[in-house]
Image (cartoon, rainbow, N blue to C red; front, side):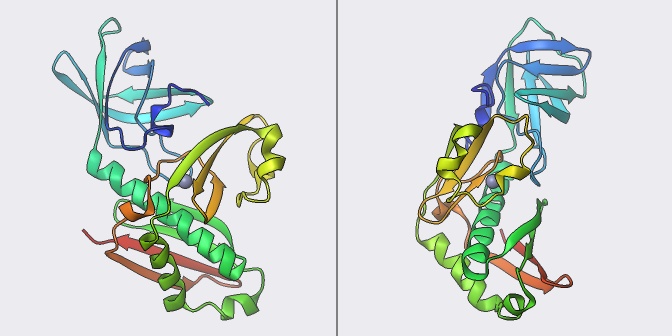
Length: 239
Ligand SMILES: [Zn+2]
């Protein structure tokens, strides 16, 4: 995992000066980037590029390993430096939602032995599907108790940190890691672990807040059954 993917280390950085590594028409690769390309249920950032006082909109991003290729609405000059601007409000909200999804998964995992079957972040809410090991466990699920437990984690100031480890060392960590590592494609040799202190460790390449106290407490939670052994939970941050 490359040091040029700055958003992996500094999720709160929304402005960066960098140079162009490669450009072909309106398709560009930067030497460094703070622009999250999308993936893992988290959409691409809303981002702009400034070069010589001219503003370009980032339309698309494609990631392959450590390389991200961005498509802009116009052609950049390959010789001149650029400034990347990520929409701060949007990024902060996605970081909150993404960390909330980890918290929900962690509480559901520890209280009900749930696994996550899917999760996704949208502009105005995030949703997660929780798979219970048995219907009995699902019947025992009480929405209000559950959300109270999630809210408690927000007030307990858990720090959120990341580290990158070699896949072959994952055995040392596996008892603590919730994501089934065997599901991560074999060609990925380095795995980024996101740890919510005293609560949870998960393999993830998204952006998160640095402490659970940075997540809004103005939240609307809902949950509904999605068939056998499954519940779909939705969380909305009210601004
Ligand atoms: Zn994550």
